[in-house]
Image 1: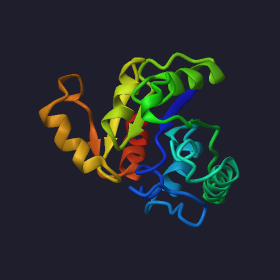
Image 2 (image 1 turned 90 degrees about the vertical axis):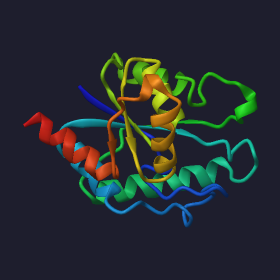
Image 3 (image 1 turned 60 degrees about the vertical axis):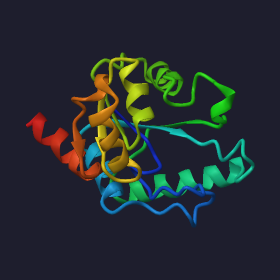
Image 4 (image 1 turned 135 degrees about the vertical axis):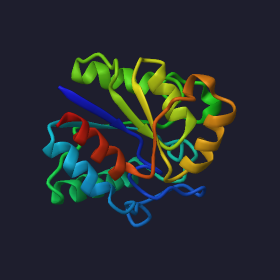
Length: 184
């Protein structure tokens, strides 16, 4: 199985410091939906790992989160793709749970669900915490410049020696093009 793990906000859809709270606010980044379609067509199993503390903050409920994810999945299916699993952490940072990235709990849940080792599995994110969660389990961390990615790229060069060699791409579509081209 070829598995890829994607962060949601800032990688697939526009992020917001005010939180994405409903399906109307969930707006895909240019090319991201098509990129997931390409992944599916290339034989990848696509999993999403996303922190969603807006649930615990009372900014939206499970129905709104499910509506956002339905919209995402429907758009991906319209592009000829499929999202095989969506894993989210509803907790606040101060809860210190094991599923909120940078902790690797969400990724461990993905490994258990698909019964696969995550060694070298690509994990695509726009923040340092996405990359740290992947590295904790031996994944191939990949940064995109969308969302908070440009700030994260700057931090990579300064403070995170374990992440200094992380590949950086402009967006999810560039990541996917690179992955598929390397398979040929």
